[in-house]
Amino acid sequence: QVQLVESGGGLVQAGGSLSVSCAASGRTFSSYAMGWFRQAPGKERELVSVISRSGGNTYYADSVKGRFTISRDNAKNTVYLQMNSLKPEDTAVYYCAARNSYYSSYGLRADDYAYWGQGTQVTVSS
Image 1 (spheres, rainbow, N blue to C red):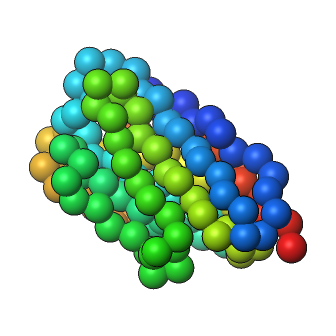
Image 2: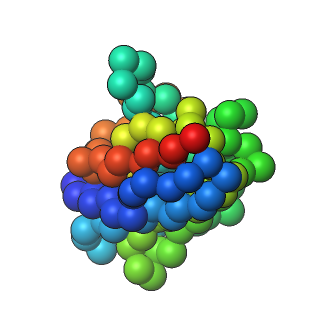
């Protein structure tokens, strides 16, 4: 089992940048594919980006492709999401998630992830 704690959210103007981090507990962080999801008020939770266990493979939602970058540091048990050129529609609670280590690949659905952080608010003002 893994516990996840996000940090780094906040308020930023449109066009600005923000980075969020997710620190994981435990000694087997490198065995978990990781993902970032977000949920805006009144909307369903949606995929933002995912990264494989080694960090060698990533996937981005079309809405963030070219603006966001996911990365991980397995030595620090941390996954990051660098967000550039932010838009008001990026406003949401951002959640970090870990997929069960039984699976070698990342998933693209929220249901693919067994462990979740508490979320961090990102607000982009226009």
